[in-house]
Length: 455
Ligand SMILES: Cc1ncc(COP(=O)(O)O)c(C=O)c1O
Image 1 (cartoon, protein in one colour):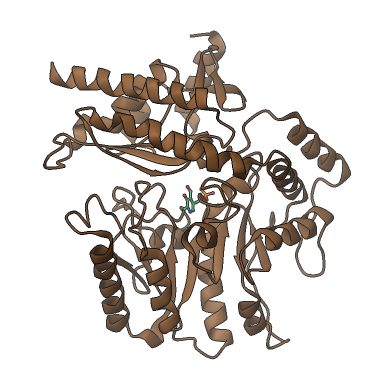
Image 2 (cartoon, helix red, strand yellow; image 1 turned 135 degrees about the vertical axis):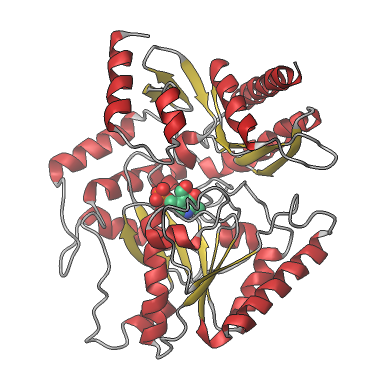
């Protein structure tokens, strides 16, 4: 380890509180300190190279280190490094990006409220549900329904909308009086033994029952990720998303699609709700791939219909937003990112490489500890089990996902451990050779851990 690496590691341990910190591991484990990156590859402070199959954190869609992005960002810093978008002000990049997002978003989702990331986009959607329902004379419709295993961010409201195992540290508090949860559309566990149609009907019935329990006149919105990400890359049974949307239509409930992960190309479309699942949401939450992680930005995209209702009284104030809403440099980065995606036809590339990634990863399904390989296109996951037949998990202390990701790191591959899972969401520009490398290294890491556990 170099002197610089040693100094940085000590500074981190002494002063930083990183996201999702387990204090014992924080004290004991060495950090992986990344120093540089190009495309789908990153290099640590000691010069070791890794292929980043996590894409940063589901976000480095066009890949790292693009000169064009650096120039667009630097140009905007020189031109106008900051401008507020409060009251009567805006700036060129913010206006242009709002129009660009409206062009890409499905149907009448033509209105954009900029946020600082995904959590604040979800939080803003939650507040919009209240504002919209009150504006149209239905203030009692302020309850929302979301799903177990959902992850929607880390603000007070967005964390309360989520309900991912392990995230609900008892020391924190959560909003519970108006946020309700129903089952995850998780075929491998919740729906085991049911075919798609039976499982979908079971989930729809549960949703209807929950609405009846709360009262349809009190339910304002349903929040859902098209494919659950951090909760386990859960691809719902065929027909589920549309069926849940139909229930929302029937009961006058807004459909909020959290596309923080699934938008901007990860599934081969600008947005997945309509193009992949045939559902027209009322609100879409977006972030991450919007700027490919070059700068922080999020967007809460909502319909003209919602806008007509909230603006129906000209005396009304929409008192929500952030200092950095519509930040000109972040918006310039997002505009350049979308321009690159268009010019390089990255969506078409994902349509081609996605199924290849799915097929190659599926070859690991025969390994003794792999319970399921699942996901779609560039959003994939391996669920590790102790017993393939019963699907029993390893005891928590085995820390199987982390063991495998540690071994993968030794082999020059970054995969994300979440409990028993190893999750992958590589940059969209990966090649077939990259896919082969990922699958080879991950397979070897799994085998090494299996051998360690068996001896
Ligand atoms: C589906 C989903 N929603 C919201 C968020 C929160 O986004 P952020 O971390 O940018 O606040 C995430 C982050 O991973 C996410 O996966």
